[in-house]
Image (cartoon, rainbow, N blue to C red; front, top):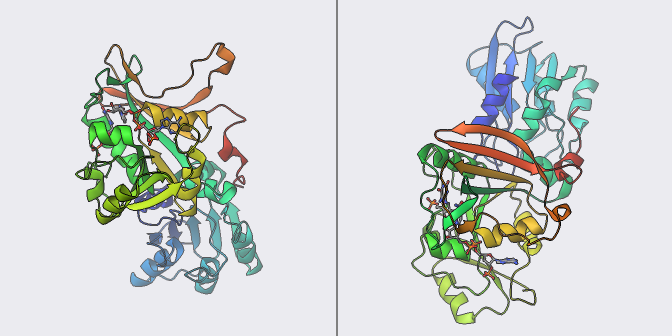
Length: 373
Ligand SMILES: NC(=O)C1=CN([C@@H]2O[C@H](COP(=O)(O)OP(=O)(O)OC[C@H]3O[C@@H](n4cnc5c(N)ncnc54)[C@H](OP(=O)(O)O)[C@@H]3O)[C@@H](O)[C@H]2O)C=CC1
Ligand SMILES: Nc1c(N[C@@H]2O[C@H](COP(=O)(O)O)[C@@H](O)[C@H]2O)[nH]c(=O)[nH]c1=O
């Protein structure tokens, strides 16, 4: 199963909006790997079919073999036929799955159909968490109908994301920035705000790690102030620009002529877009993971709205003094009002630290998704 999980990791960036899945076929005596594979881009073969084809191309007989799959084999006709039927037709003897497929069209039916076909089924409890984490956005979208929002920020040890004059490049060093690109690669879309677009003229693409595809990029820009020479307008796909209904029509036409995809939303009384409206549009586009990489204003607004599922915080051993915090929140009068999170993971990346935080229970919404068996 560990090998199947590492195969599934190779599918990151390939399969969206489908989950990343890996499959390994092992001989009945457990001694030989007969075939292996991972999910292909949407409409193409799933992991189980890739592993069966791999075994066939090597001339291996898979009758009686055990299939280790990181997610329950699908039981429905989507763009491809059900994988549980393919496994049954090939004559495998046993299927071990690490997580229940949260897709309501599958959700236990894959394993049930295999059992009905006389195939032995088993859950790999030890790998359930890793299998869910690999597809955390898919699990969340299936359970709650909205993507997983990961807020990424680079901060000094004294909590600053930029100097007082707005300069922020660079606070963290190359290894941490490369790590940040690996997290961008996981996402279906990278979202930022007009403050960051203006100050940094960022590209927000994946360059420091190899990738099969670039995530979409999206921008919150209520008044359509994005400069026409912005690097964000030069990506492979159209930049999604969220703006207020009241934004100047001539700016809208100019940005459209530069290839941007414009989405008009209602503004609140202060002229700001409502984070939940932006999230709803992104959810409608079936993104599994959103990588929010913005400045203190947008970060603060999304955190205050309770829409952030995970904070990916890179901490540099530097003190920037009076500057811009990575999220503008409050001010609050009492400590009870503070947003309480918990450490999920921490690790050193080069000279910097990577901290991952998740909301303290019970606010942790992914916990309400169907549990893996
Ligand atoms: N170190 C790091 O990791 C990073 C640092 N930075 C730094 O941050 C600075 C830019 O920060 P900032 O100006 O905050 O940029 P942002 O990228 O956060 O852009 C501001 C955005 O926030 C929106 N906004 C503001 N208030 C609200 C609200 N109450 N509700 C909803 N939306 C809101 C604005 O909307 P509207 O369109 O209506 O104006 C705008 O889209 C730069 O100095 C940059 O270098 C930026 C990214 C990462
Ligand atoms: N300053 C800072 C970061 N800043 C983030 O990186 C963006 C630039 O992305 P790109 O144009 O793709 O290179 C920038 O707008 C901001 O969101 N990131 C980090 O990992 N470490 C850092 O010290």
